[in-house]
Each structure stands twice: as structure tokens, then as C-alpha cells.
Length: 432
Image (cartoon, rainbow, N blue to C red):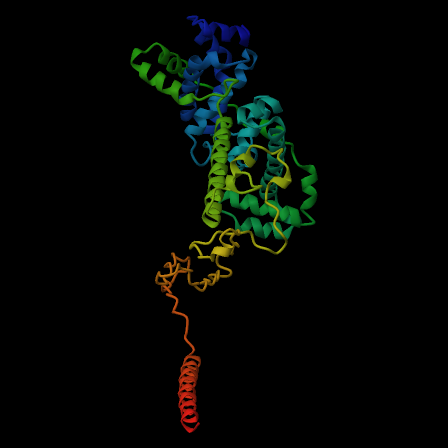
């Protein structure tokens, strides 16, 4: 039965579909889980992988990638049970150096090499399981292979008689009984710097040969009963539903992994960009006192985020060189009526304080009145000056006192001379 036939049987809820799926792929999935978790954790991870596959088989887009899909589900289950360290060394290991070299690598390197070397995943399938692109997955596989080659070289040289290199002999003796990973790292660094040990890197063993020296785990017969009984036990119905919910969400191809998490990071980045744009708008409004969309020639930052084709001349506004942009002052400045119609000059807040304009008070002119009416003036209206201006009442026209006294003196002299003339005339009449 092919993988496509298995998928169709599982979707049709064929009674023998789960048993056929177990017989076809359970051993390979168990080996991967055993390599990552050890024998006890491998049984539980295999059982939950089968539960998740039975629940989400309808989400698998390409039935021919059934085994790759099962490995992706198993990887997610192993990641949930991930613990520091590595599986215990088997009692009869074919090659202890190969075992320590492989399990001395970082967990991600071990996982990539296990999937590519012992499960035969190509770069595209490896990237699908890891949630990466094929090129990125291939680059990680190559770097992991190089680190494994250096690690196996260090293990071999640490176990060999270091008579050809006294420095390596001292290094191995100092690290005896300590952490094997630290000893391996010191030997690797020594190989790169030592002229005697450097040629050993040219005769390194390939990563594939190193993995071929590792033991293959054998799946116990009791695992089948433990896994298959989970699907027929009614008391485990709630647990099966829990495992099925825990396996999601899946990507459009039906695979779990880091693709969903990267989408979340993109959403968080978009929200951060919007928040940053909002902060810019608030700062501009606090400085200028007006929204950005009301400023001539300036577009809102939110529009700039989603319109990359906008011209450069739209933002920022054209400002003469070395001249700060206009900023609205906090307190209004009183102006004279002559300059009320003129546009107020902007000042830069924090650079130079604006000087209030001088209030010009015009001189009051007396109003012309008709004859017989007392002269009066119209009280001046309110002025824009911040200080009150007193009402000015025009004084009456001044009288020239000297002119008045001269006029009165001339009149009295004229009357006196007239009296003299009359007296003088009477005297002439009497004499004649």
C-alpha cells in the first residue's frame, strides 16, 4: 500500500488504516524519537504522533509526503519533551568515539544530521520539517557536517597516543576526568593552531560514515500494543482530543513548526511599525500644535508606510537651509491694529523667545461740534495693548493772555485820548 493509499484510507476512516500506517512508518518515526529523547520518551512521542496524524490527516495537501509529514509531527512532539543532555550510551556501542562525537554536537546539529543522513530527507523536505527554506536547510546541514568532522577528529586524537605532539599530550592529560565536551573543544582548537596536528583535518571521516557507526535502536514489541490500544480505549478519548488540539495550528500544507511562529513575528513587527508612526505623529503635533495632515506639503506618516511609490518631494517640506521649521508659540502675542492683518512671524520654541510688539496709541483728536454745543470728545474704544489706556479729554483752546491784555490797554488809551480831545475842543471854543 502506497502513502497515497494510506492517506485515502485514513480519511475514509477505514478500520484497518491505523494498523497499516503503523506497520509502514512506525519504526522510522520511533528511531527518530529515540535519537532525540531516548527509549522511554520515544514510545510516548510515537503514540502522540499517531494520534495527531489520525486527527489532522485531512490537512495534508500532498499525500505522497506522508512520511515527511509524520517526521514533522514527531519533531514537534519531541520538542515538547525536550530535555538537556542526550540519550544514555548503549551498553554495546559499536564505536564509542562516533557516539561521543555525535552527541557532543548541539541538539540542532544532531537533529539535522539525523534527518538528512539516516532518514534520507533531501534539502526541500528537510526545510519543510524544520520550517525553513531549502537553501537555508542545506547550509545548516553543511555546517553541521563540518562540526561533526572536527569532533570525530578530536575524539580520535584524544584516544590515540599523543607521542607525535607533546602539546596535545599535555592538553589531554589536563582534561582527563573532566567534561568530555570541554576536552573535545580544546582538542579541536589545538588542531587548528598546531602544525603537527593540522594535517589530520585533511584525513577526516565524513559525517555519513560517522552516523553509520552509530547503533540502530530496535523498537520493542510492546510499543505496538501501547500505541494501538490508545485508539480503542474509551477512557483515553479526552486525551486524544487534547493531543489533537495541541498539534495545531498547521500551515497551508498541513505541516507544523516554526512557520507559524515566524508569521507571528511579522505581525508583531507590523504592530511595532504602526506604533512608531503614531509616536511620530504625536511628537509633531506637540511641537507644531497642529496635525500633520494640516501642514502644507506634509503627508501623514501612516500613509507613507503603505505608499512606497510616493515622491520624495512630498516629505519633508521645503525649508531654507539652516533655518528651523516654524513652530507655533504657546502664548499669543498682542499686535497693533496695523499689523493685525499681517501673518504672525513664527518663532522657534526653546531657541529664541518672541518679543511682544509695542502697542501704538494714537493721539485723540477733538471732534468738531456745532455752535452752542459744548465741545466733547468720544471716549476711545478698547485698544489691543495689554495695559489699559486712560481716556484722553481734549483741553479747550488756549487763550493768549498777552494779546488779551494788549487789546484791553489799547482800548483804554483810545478812550482817554478821546476825552482829552473833547476837553481841548471846549477850551478852544471858550477862548474864541
